[in-house]
Length: 252
Image (spheres, rainbow, N blue to C red):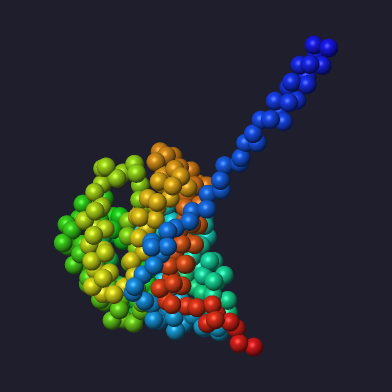
């Protein structure tokens, strides 16, 4: 009888015990205000029509591929994949031009010729991280941004500026505020969208989507971050280009 009583009590406890919920999936959502721009992308809008061709050139440093040995998992390739989903009937090509360890001042003189040669509809210029690490003069950085954006616009492309990546481990060692501020100012002056990678990654870290403080984040985390950046960037591009769902219908 004692054994039966113990089993009965155990069964009652198991029934009464709350079901432990599975931890929420990491959705890497981005607040709408971080994916909204008052500046537009008219050349992207013109190209993103059924039967059209959209060529995008990403100019960046190693953080375009860092931690990802397979470039197909890096954010430029993920951007291409997500844009193909969002823009049915449009041929989307995203190319990557790596400028390893180069500051904005070193890159700026080459940008007009690069655009002239590649003929993209859109350039995403990812910069600022190397400048912050090398502690480049903030005024020189701003002048280089101004020169580079103006040169690319003159060469006939839309431009998006992408700022520094966020890392809580290096935030106290590398001051990026001057570079972040200057990128915001230059974007406003030239009326180009600014993809705030820094704020987006900080949001993911603070919301618990990613633990960016880890000393050895690992390949899987890097792939997830790159995938989320590609998805967020695709939404940003479509929104800034003012592309509506009705514009994407393939005429039959």
